[in-house]
Image (cartoon, rainbow, N blue to C red; front, side, top):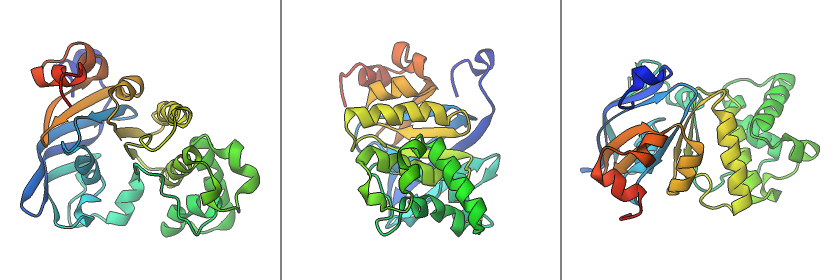
Length: 262
């Protein structure tokens, strides 16, 4: 991924794209992106609004194909296997590659417990004691257990915005995925909740490969090990975060991270 991966001891790659192109009808929003995501690291996707960041992210667990007119060419490799192969079960894939959206999306008619358990029951893990253990583990993994343990059977909508977002993270990690995708997860949150999510992202990488889309370059610098800069649907540069922000190779990258455009 970086200019000198071998000498820097880059971890093995868990997820990768090969000539990935994503379109809406005949209009390409992402063009021939080749990018690797090392195991148990955080990669930030940055770039100006409309550059294809979220479209690219949604390709990584086949959410883009659910969009009106959404099509994909190229490959997305998870542990070396193309997720767009006809034999791939898309529901099972989305449990291996969990996703959290920009706005907290708890299921409004479900309790806190039911929200986290939803993915497990879809996966057939319905035994009550096993589900309870996994729900508790997921809530602890999302740094939410201590705040909700006494009210698991209350509505998820009673939680604050930051708590709801952590609940969505708990729901995503309950099936124990390989990869967690975060699409601007703090853009709707206050500063205190944002800091909580950023701290959580750092904790998550001990167990998961994390990819985060963010419009906030300071956030990318704080939370990520690697950063990829997108512009007009193209991957301009990807490298270790320190190198992207301190010594970018591309003029467009330097202009963006120094605030000259975007």
